[in-house]
Amino acid sequence: MIRLAVLAGALMLGGLPGAGQALADCRQALALALDVSGSVDAREYRQQIGGVAEALDSPEVRARILAMPQAPVRLMVFEWSGPQEQAELVPWTDLDSAATLDGVIETLRQTSRRSTPPGTALGVAMAEGVRRLTAQSDCWKRTLDISGDGKSNLGPRPRTVRTQLEDSGVTINALVIGVDNPRSTDIRQAEIAELSSYFRAEVIMGPGAFVQTAIGFADYARAMKEKLLKELEGLVVSEL
Image 1 (cartoon, one colour):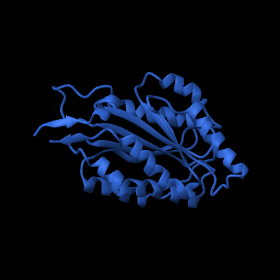
Image 2 (cartoon, helix red, strand yellow):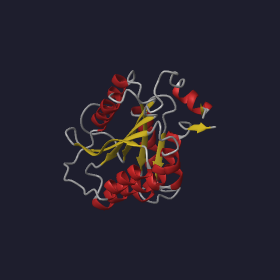
Image 3 (cartoon, helix red, strand yellow):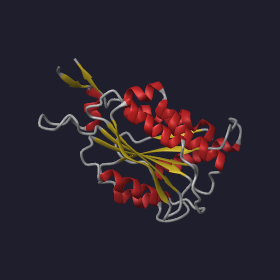
Image 4 (cartoon, one colour):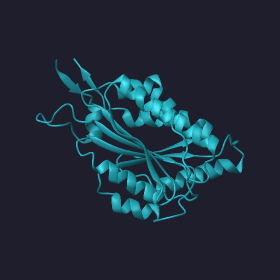
């Protein structure tokens, strides 16, 4: 059979692998960084981590992840809060089968919250995610997907860290979590817009980088699903 790359994927990736490159290479390394700082309570923690599991288990996301098992998506999930508080939940895993994806989803659903001190070291989380992604050199694309419900208040400024990471070849997207159910006339709506602007100015980087917004943690699963679909689109190979 002849395998043809979708043109959108070719454009996004700046060209497809050469003829001598193994098709079994990872097509995208995707690191999900989840905010578990002091502003996230126990209920919100369950909504966030359960939202990741729900998004990964949606039919649309599953179809895109599993569309090309010969060159799988490689996923890693970690939590972050203060400067010394990063914890791996899911190690780098090639999502090359439905069973493997199901295992990751179940791991997330069974994860319990650990104790963390207050503090939001967003710059440190960015650096940690990029450090882990740069080791995945056989992946066609590398993406850090960082969630947060507030501005950084510990460690280096995110903008400074971003400047240091610009040559890494990693794209950083963000999922900004606002307050629950703001009305259009509510001051909280302006707060979501302000936080989104902060992440655009300080955090995201790389071609096509974007900010996705969740209206509270109850909306997290919907927002994560939409973000994953955007990140995975174009990176599919059709078989003729």
